[in-house]
Length: 394
Ligand SMILES: Cc1cc2nc3c(=O)[nH]c(=O)nc-3n(C[C@H](O)[C@H](O)[C@H](O)COP(=O)(O)OP(=O)(O)OC[C@H]3O[C@@H](n4cnc5c(N)ncnc54)[C@H](O)[C@@H]3O)c2cc1C
Image 1: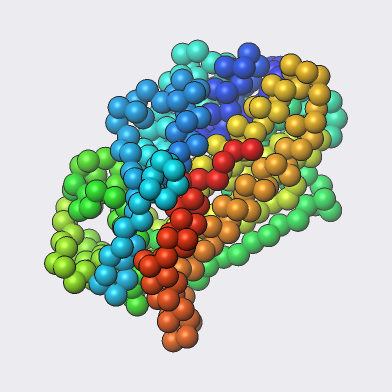
Image 2: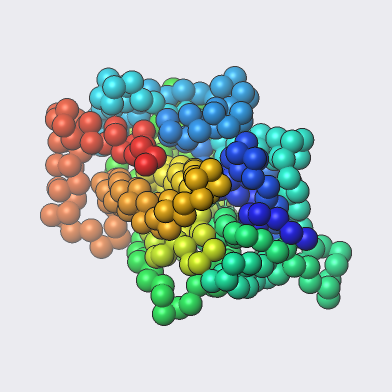
């Protein structure tokens, strides 16, 4: 099999890239190791930055998002039973975010790809990228039902959109790679509950017992998170214990109430910051979680993946139109500038709101001082609002 761009992975990065290339008249093949139902049901991101919303619309993939997504003009910060709203449009010249689940973004992009785009192969697991530093890189892969019989996808370019455990980045020689990493001594216990969200915007709460986040997937489905110690098993927590702990951490002095409902899913996510440099080697490019991870506090992971594939699609289109590889050559540096801003923002949000197990009273007071500063300084609030609604694509 032969194509111009071989894409490994059908998460948001791989699927959107296939769509952008299709719109630019460039052919591609997407290889996805799992089946369609798995990709469409994996609960993860839910907040789309303004720039991501604009890109999905321009790519012709925004119709259902505009109908069913929930535009949010702010978030609420809570600590010491007090609440403070950050108003995004007022602070950023009109920018906002959209609550629309990653599962739905993937469903929309898969439907478009199968209807109008190039091949999207499910159950096709990439085993290795070969010849990354030659003019004709290849992806060796295995399709379900073809065991013992590897296939090869011959390409002009390969883009590894295969997430944090993918194979693409292994094709970059170790001596050229630098990895920057931090793991946090806590995770998020996340639940989905069949109950209307108790607040119409996201609520980020700092509490002496740990962080809590109120979020939503739709007007009738709540998504809530609790900071828990690293290595916690979700089954250790009964539904009643989860609700009681959420109530404690979200409590306010003005009698606000958290509505309970049936919990339909619970899982624990570890918290990690990770950057793999460079994001390109020869004709192999990395995009999304394959190259970088952020703790979910800043809601940046999916949005960074979008930034990477927009940068790649633009660079390849530029090369096709002008013959110049200058933007492709600059891919890694261009993406990393935005990646590091998102790493910084996600780190700031994480350390602002979570309580480390070994936090000292001094650090506790500093956290509260940072939150008080956000509640009283337009400059501090503007910085948060700009970071949350998203850094511009270059
Ligand atoms: C609990 C949680 C909450 C989050 N909240 C947010 C949020 O609010 N906002 C936000 O922006 N981000 C959030 N994120 C992060 C976001 O979900 C990820 O950054 C995003 O999924 C990255 O997309 P991706 O396409 O790069 O990778 P993935 O979504 O991981 O997709 C990679 C794909 O590659 C496939 N694959 C892997 N290896 C192979 C192989 N060898 N061959 C073929 N296919 C392969 C995988 O099956 C997968 O489908 C959250 C993450 C979690 C876990």
